[in-house]
Amino acid sequence: MTDSRLAIVVLAAGQGTRMKSALPKLLHPLAGVPIVGHVLATARALDAAHVVTVVRFERDRVAAVVAEDLPESIIVDQDEVPGTGRAVEQAVAALPADFDGDILVMNGDVPLLDADTLRAFIDTHRASAASATILTAALDDPTGYGRVVRSGSGAVDRIVEQKDATDAEKAIDEINAGVYLFGLSELRDHLASLTTDNAQGEKYLTDLVGLLRGTGSEVGAVPVRDSWLVAGINDRAQLSEAALKLNALIVRGWQLAGVTVQDPATTWIDIRARIEPDVTILPGTQVQGATVIATGAVVGPDTTLLDCEVGENAVVKRTDATLAVIGAGASVGPFSYLRPGTELGADGKIGTFVETKNALIGHGSKVPHLSYVGDASVGVGANIGAGTIFANYDGVTKHRSEIGSHVRTGSHNVFVAPIRIGDGAYTGAGTVVRKDVPAGALAITVAPQRNMDGWVEANRPGTDAAKAATENTTADDAAATSGD
Image 1: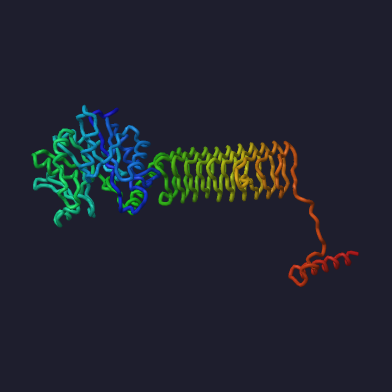
Image 2: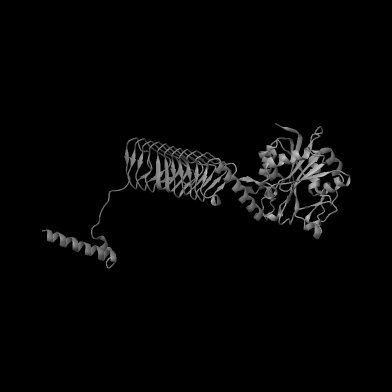
C-alpha cells in the first residue's frame, strides 16, 4: 500500500573522484546491478507517494538508469550551488504543492541499506515528537564520516563533517549515516538558512540538525543494528568490501531456500538470478545477470553463466555461457563456450572444447567434442562428429546451416554454409560439405587413399623414418621367407 505521507529524495549528483574511473561512481556494478540501482530498489520497496532523484555529474547516464529502474521518479538537475543541502532544496521544490508529509533523504552510494531497516526508522520517527531523525552507526574507524555531537544530556546537538571537526570531535565514533527524515514544513522553514560557510564551501544538509536544535526542535537518532548496512562506497576498495558482504547475504539466502552451495567463498551470485530448490552449485561458479536455474541442476565447478536458462536436472561443468538456454537433463562441458543464441534441447549434449553461437541443437542431439557450431540448427537425435566446423562466414556475410534429425556426421567435417543436410543422412570422416545432402544419403568428399610403397626410403634416405621402414621391410621379408 502506498505511503501517502512519504516522499523520498535520492542524492545521486556526486562525481565520485576517488573511484578514478570514466564510469560514474553510482553506475559501477554491484551484484550485477549499478550501485544506485540497489538504492532505487529500496526506494521502490518503501512504496512512497513520491520519489525525487537529484543528478548532476554525468547527468544523462545516471538519469537513464534511474528512468529504467524507477520510472516514476522525478529527476531533478542540481544547479551550480554545491552540497547536499542545495540538492534537497531543489528536490523539495519539485514535489507537488499539495504534498505535506515526511521527507526521507537517502544517499545513492549506500547500496546495502534495506527497506526493513528504513521502515523501522520511519516508524520510530513518526512515534516521536522529533522534527527530524537521523540514522547513525558506531564505527571502529569513523574517518571520512560526519560525527554526531551530543549534548551533556545525550540529545543530538549537531553533525560535524570530517573536514570541519576538531580533534576532540574526530575522536567520536558515532557517525551520521547520511539518512534523514524530516517533516516537510520544518524542512522548508530551514533550508533557506543554509550557507556555504565551511571548509568545503558547500551547503551541508547536516547543518539543518544544528539549525533545528537552535530553534528548540528535537532531533532524534536511530542507530543501525549493523554498521555495514550504511557503508558508503567511495573507492574501489569499498566497492569490493560491499560486493563481498552482499554476495555473502545472497548466497546464504539461497542456501536457506534449499540450494546447495558447496563453497560460498568462491561462488558469486548476482541479485537478479533465480535458483530453484535442490540445485547444486559447485566451487568457482558465477551466476550472473538474470540467470535462472531449475531444480535438480548441477552447475560447476569453474562455471560462469550470464543471463542463461538451465533446465531441470541439467549438468553444466567448467563452462562459460552467455544468453544460452540449456534444456532439462542436458549435459554441457567440461571446457565448453556457449555464446549468445545457443539453445540446447532436453537430454542434449555439448561436450569438451565445443563452441556454439546462434545454434539450435535439438532434443537428444550431441556435439561431444572439439567442434564449432555457429549459425546452425540441428534436429533431434543427431550426432555431430569430433572436430566438426560449421564454416558460417564468407568474409562478408554469416550464413546458416540446417542439419536434420538423426543425422550422423563423421569426424573432422566442415560444413560450408549455407547448406542443408536432410534427416537421417550420414557424412564420412574428413568430408567437406559444400552442397545440400538429401535425406538418408551418405556424403563423402575425400579422395580414395593411395599408398606409394618405398616413398620414404627413396625421398628421405638416411632419416630415422627411412631406417625404421627399412628394418620393418627386412623383418617382413624374413617372416615371409620363413613362412615359405
